[in-house]
Image (cartoon, rainbow, N blue to C red; front, top):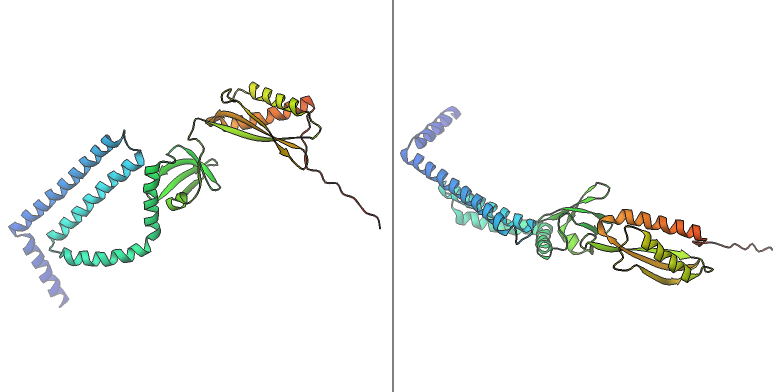
Length: 274
C-alpha cells in the first residue's frame, strides 16, 4: 500500500513539473528573486558610499543590514505567494507569535534600543579607550546588542548595551590631553614652599609633561601621618603609562636627594602595667 502511494505521489509531482506553465512560473520567480537581491546589493553599496562621510560606521552598517533583511522578507513573501500560502492567516499567527516572542525577548529589545542611543549619541567610538565599572579597555565595535572591548591585559569582554546606558562610562582617550593626579604626602616637618618648588622642577624636567596647561600643585589636607599635596601634570593621552612611571620615579628620587621624608602610617603601642 505504501509503495502504491509513493508511486502515485512521484507520478503526480512529475506530471506537475512537466506542465509548461510550471517552468514559466519558476523562471519568473527566479528572475524576481534575482532582481530583489541585485537591487538590495546596489542599495547597500550606495548607502555605504553616501553615508560614509556623514555617519559613523556602526550606524551605516545597521542601515545596510536593515536593507538586506528587508530584501529577505520580500523574497520570503514572494515565495509564499508563489506556493499559494494564505498570508492573512500566516500574518495572524505571526502576530500572536510576535507577542509571545516579545515578552521573551524584552532584554534583547532593550539592548537594541540602547544600541540606537549609543550610536546616535556617540559617547565613544571603536578605537577609544573606555572604563565601564571595573572594566577598562579599547572598544572593538559598537553593535546593535552589545559593545565589544579588548582589555589592556588582552581579554575579550562583551557588555550589553543596556548595561552601558545605565552605567557611568569614562572615555579615557576622547581628548588629546589629560591630567595625571598624584597624591604626594610629606611629613609635618617639611618646608612646604620648598616641596612645591621641587615638584615644579620635577614637572619642568619631565619630557612627557606639558608646559600648557601648567602643572597643579595644591596643598590638599592634613592627614594622620603627614600633609597631602595634590600634584597634577598634563600629558598626551597616549603616554599614560610612561608619564605615570616617570613622574613617580622622579618624585621619589628628588625627595630622597633633598632629604624630604615621605611619611608612612605609624602606630604607637603603650603597654600598661598592672
